[in-house]
Length: 496
Image (cartoon, rainbow, N blue to C red; front, top):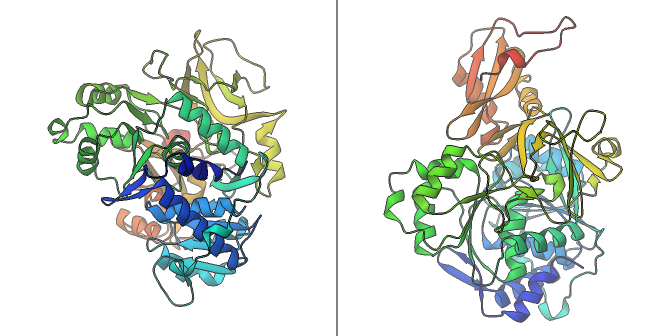
């Protein structure tokens, strides 16, 4: 089934029910479906079709949902891109994914204009603001009555979401229509989602977590989505209270900011039945403070882009254990293994591996990396964890050097490559450091030819990296610690 069919099904069942609320304006499911069909028919007029790779680079707004479902409906493969990405980041993803068209809004427009000449496969750029050389999004229209979703099998590509390892270039995880359908159904059932739910989505929709749990599963069950563009703690607390929100999806940084807000006691959160957290481990003290101040227990989950979204979570019927990320989803097999792939005894630490209908198809154009990650149907996460006697999963550490800042993944190698382009930097190493607000902060240790200031380094990085990847802590050394063979050692640089 083409996953876009879930929207048409809900529109038939609940035509007048509110689908999206944004800036005090509302779209019903019938209105949303009509807009999607019109845009889908319009996109086909511009030559986009089944199998086209189309990048979607947009902030949270109804147009994101409209464009996303329209692309899926015509059979295109969606390539989501963070609208705050800089030129080099955009160019790499567009070229690597062989994208033939791009839809961009005002947030990322300047960077796209600056780098458009470097796009090797992009033939058309659609822009929400009307600008020279690009096709205005408002001009993309067709007859909705003439359109029906392109048939798809469960193994057909739906989206390519870029992730990164600690070495090499970012990789595009291929997520299928079957992956999205299974995960939407499973997640919605675990959360017992209904048309009565009001789900506040401030997490960016380009992110797998927000797209699945803040959009697809809501549409599947006819819930109302309250879209927010920016996370401003006091504003979001007010929105939860005044809109009687029942489901809030966040990351640990958001909850940390909530409990430190002096206004938290002003609001009534009695409508809130689910507070989800993902993207990073949540400190137990924050979990307890949220329960005290907001009257809701946070349900932590664990997953990866390669797992569509989730691997484990806390269904309502099981007891929550502080520090745990729950139990594997129904239908997912999970093991903790040693370096040889042999399962370790209960309670011992090893690498987390899993298999199930949430497993990505593979990495786009990267057969070797795919074969290293998926072995005999088991996906090796690169994360270290343990399970207790009851099957609860605990994340112990990350096998990779990935930094999670405020729920966003930051990969040291990518930051280091930018630092190495600085004319005065001789050597560098990037690590994560504990931070009370963001969970982790990006720290860079650098050796320079001439005297520099931390502000110089930060300003340089801001020109080439998305804001959350920029190192905020800069340390100057005369030399970096190394092995006898000259390899830089990061362990001595990490602060406990």
